[in-house]
Image (cartoon, rainbow, N blue to C red):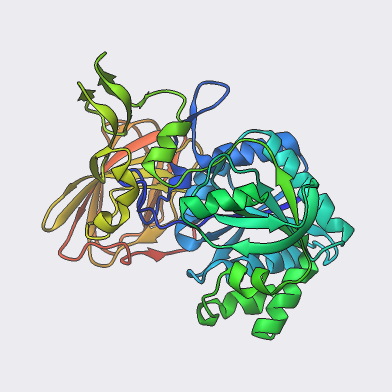
Length: 439
């Protein structure tokens, strides 16, 4: 089974846990079978591997998410990197070209395309395999997954099948309706459109050639910022006459707001939180080291992170994005391929952050031209390279790097460092990467 997971998201609807770098699918909020916490992308990836250990998984994601993907899934996961945001059609055909040109997947092979962040049970992934098998038959050019609706939702589009069979052709698509119209659609056998489909790889490449004039991975990647922004539905689905839909009867939830997220949580609190016995339907997610105490609340979600604190009625949480759009501050937490960092203090000419490196990982060998840095090792062991000179580091070590100093740190164990940046111009663009020296 070849799967393309679409990993988009602006990080606004689940603020303050999400931001422009850390989209909702990277927030660790779900319990694993072992009792740890995992994110949506980790959960979906684990479920795919359980359903099909040999599955070929490619994640289509913007550049800003690559470090988080490597941090959570490792270095070996396939990634089709989107140089910029151009909507779903360019993202999907770029990923198809990646499969064909970089992974050697033939044009007659089927591929399943789906969002990276549904909250589903394991049966969903067996349904994805069956969707791919149906596409391989070639009875239709596209095979959609139609989700059996549980209520007349106004949030989803609807698929009207020609009959009640497990797999049937599509008679019409309907955009997001009001509740009354949705109920009428459901009475006619309509299904939710969850944005999941399967087709042959060559079908996607054919549409790329027709619209862009080429379909090879290198040219698509190099020309990506000039490709038109267009959705896959508008570019392909609405114009395709041969579409089938395959029914999915299992549980499926699109977690897009705090309200729907709290419905999927297995417990009422994640992190340091206390609810007294007068709270009703209250959920707390706390990433700070200080406790959150809730008393006498009902139908409320509370979330605290370095980005800010949210206290909201669950119904009102659906209207969060326009408010967050007005907030202008730098990213306060991010996952990197080597670990993570958290901003502790922002001064006029200083920035203090806590850096955590995973065991065996290292930063790029780099320098800064407009700032000095002072690192204090808090815990763990490893080594640092400063201008080509290696030295071992342990708790209490202080490293000073003036502007222009080439440096990196390598973690033998989990390594925690307090990093103080000093300068009049402190920004993420002030970084030059260099080849790693042999020392």
